[in-house]
Image 1 (cartoon, one colour):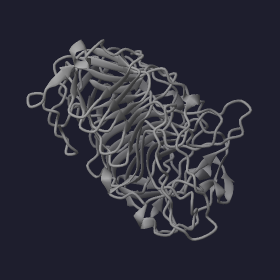
Image 2: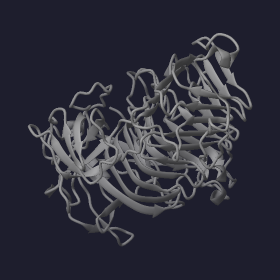
Image 3: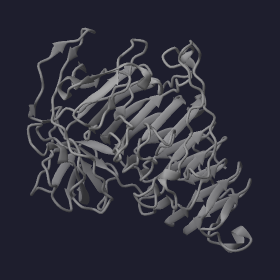
Image 4: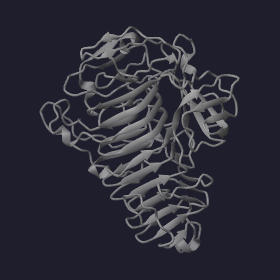
Length: 541
């Protein structure tokens, strides 16, 4: 029926029964009030628009999206996969003219409970403690549990590419290095390249619709509102990211956010998929609440996650986070864009709540071999602070640890932060995550401070910028102008160790100005990484 190697569900060898056939269910077709269970040995073909209150796929059961007929499955509660949910595989993709959507409806972010850590310490030297995962009816989303497999693969599509020829107001054409799979009607994101000295540099993300594609040349339905520089042989140039896929997992709209959880020995294999309006966020709470709920999260799987991968995928308009990998090893993340989210775009962590800075046996809990290649993290905000709320939050583009970080770019991190910031002092016990603060420049011009020598003997640079405006959110309506964001980019290429995910706020803190926050850039050739304290926290004023 298909296993962890991504083998597709074979409807020629098995009896696949149509979801929209009463005979499949032995009675009425499921509705929004039906708790659907697909038992062992049964394969249901999703070949129509369908609804369910909840969907449970038992071990040995399967639901497979048709490769010839478009379908939308709207679920008003949890989808729990103990067996197989097949929305396409690497070797059996949905063709470009067929769409499969999994839509979650009826949830509210404030109802989510999350999976908070239960053991806290730090006064003694002890090992970390994993947190058991419980499926909650309140926390609506896709749960891949036991030895369940969730595969999804649409028509092969390059997620993002560097601009080789830019675009500007009055000029709706651009060229990129790679436009594989890009089609008319696709929604595209353009990252800023303006100079930091320009007053409106923080507004210069653009979103537009593709009118036509000829090789690597792309024509937009309308010209962008801002200039986006491109070139062939320079470092400072913009990016174009394609946000549209024909296999989609999303919430019903932007007002609430479901989540995807992969736990125990579950497997997720995503290739050319769109994850939109996911990642619930509660206002006026501590960071990362509801705890462990993200657009895509791998929860403490150790080596069981080794066959999972995320390729050519767009994760955007999230409530919070992007991809969260906690104590899970061997996950490949390649050619992915995470755009318009809060808190953390890509995290590779373990839970040190039980031991703080005194964790022993860390090597058993730190994620490893979770390699990030060609990942774009764009427009990552500090969570908005409700009136009268005393909670503080942070923004991190990419955690440095857990595997290689190669050919990655971050732009617009913490664009909505306040004038001052606090963060824990570095303890020297572990190498901290790469919280990457953006630098703003044009391809032909860069505003930086002179290079200086760091304590590690490597070259560092600092860059200053004014405070950007508050975060704004948009829905995909096809307009050419995107939401407020910063103008900047940083290319990242690093190999580093793993940060932990807890107790940072208990360390001593200090304040800094925006100018000093930009220091300690570490450069290597044309690659730029930033070494910084374990987590940066922002105080709103």
